[in-house]
Structure formats: structure tokens, C-alpha cells
Image (cartoon, one colour):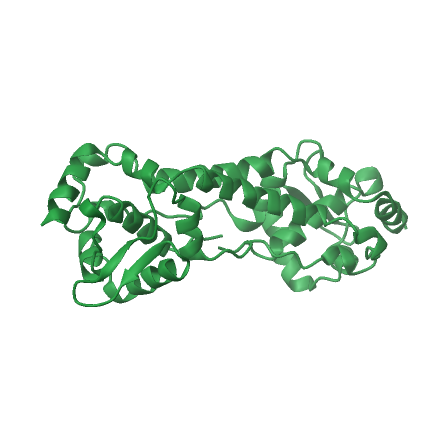
Length: 155
Length: 155
């Protein structure tokens, strides 16, 4: 099981965009330079976040990306799923319905116990990410870093 | 993010082994036939479960696999991690320490807020799987299937 590296980028970019004074858009190259990320790859992440409605993209020379809504209402889950997708990590192939003791359709009215458990585990994972907002994450960044970001982003 | 298909196999095999009367070992081909699984691939899963101490392998013509301990003490997490490994799905590349606003070593005494959050989410996932035993999962299998298994496994 692996969470893609772009999730780290997406969360950090959202955290940074939440710190931009006056909510002005940040250009892609500014975001890439801020964290020393490969711009072409970051571009895909930012586009995915835009498609998912997490970011708002403004075209043009003074354009860029901003959060689509207030950081207080944007959950970490929305950012993570914007980047990683919303597919269930566990896909049940219903092996209970195969082989010598194959369950009958009658016996499969309730979901497979293995499938239910894996689904529950994923829900617990999602729930942890749903209860934290990007504003919460900003508040956990050390003051000195936030002050440095303010200076850089205002310039 | 993707949980490997073998996790379904591993959990179902553990659930089945917990239902074997008299705790006798089941041969690999019996397990494969029971769920109509490809024996060569299943073999890797059973070996991983044995290495992790979840199963006990008995060699020889009457040998096979049994649970290494009571199903009441074997958690779903142990089975899942035996098959899937115990690596964290999210690996932090510490991008906070890179780029224009790079955090100093002083500012990194506490773990990165993104890393901590993803770690917490994974712990919630693990916790869900840790609180359920293989015996619990057996008890959730429909009675009619368990009766069929008993007949098949006694034969």
C-alpha cells in the first residue's frame, strides 16, 4: 500500500496558499520554487486539485492558483482525495463466491465480512483526514516559518 | 493507494483455517481449490504469512498450513500486515526542508505536520484492523457457509 508522493506536495501547497496575504493567486513556478519541486510534475498535481474543486486556477500572466474556498472549510481529506483519487484501496473480488464452498446469491445478501472490514478501515483513515482542515495544519506550522512565508509571499 | 489482492486471499484463508476441525493442517492445493485461487500465487501469500508467524507450515505429504495460534488472538491486522508488509504507506520526503522557505534543523525538531497527519490516518486504519480477530470474522460468516465448510474440511 502506497500513498503517492504528490499527496505531500498537494497538502504543502494548500498549506502555503492558505498563507498568501490578500488571497492573491500564486503562479505555478512560485509554488514549485518554494518547495524545490519539479514544475512539470507539480503541474499535474495542481490540475488535479483544480479539477476536484480544491483550487481555483486563474489564467493569464498575473494568474495562478488560489484555494477555491476558505482554509477553515477545506479538509485534508479533500486535498488528499483530489490528488490520490477516491477509489477504495481494497477491491473485493468476491472469492467467497468461488471454489468448492462457493457462497450462494442467497448467502451473499450481506456484504463479505472481509470487504466490510477493509471498508471500515479505510473509513477510519478518511475520518482522520476529514476532521483536520488546512487552517488547522497552517496553525501547526512553526511561527518562524509562517513569518518567513509571509515575507516571501508578500514580495 | 491500493491494497494488494492477496490481502483478500490471506484473510479468507485465515478464516477458513480457523474452521478446520481438530486444527489439522490444510494442504496448499486444498486452500487454493476452496476459493479457486491460482496455487502458485497463493503459495507466495501463504509463505509470507508463515514468515510473519501467522501460519505454521508442516512439511511432508500429510503436511500443510494451520494457524500459528488461536483465532481468538490473531488480529486481522496481523494477517493484513503479514501479506501487505508493515511499511508506512506515506513516506515524507521532507519538502518543508527544501526550497525558498526551507525549514531549519531547529524548526524541524517536531515532525512535519503533514507527515504526522498521514501517520495518524494510517494508525486509525491499523486500529480498525487490530480490534477485530479472525475468530470475530469467522462468527460473521453465514451459518450455512460454516456448516458447508465443516463438511468439506472434515472429509
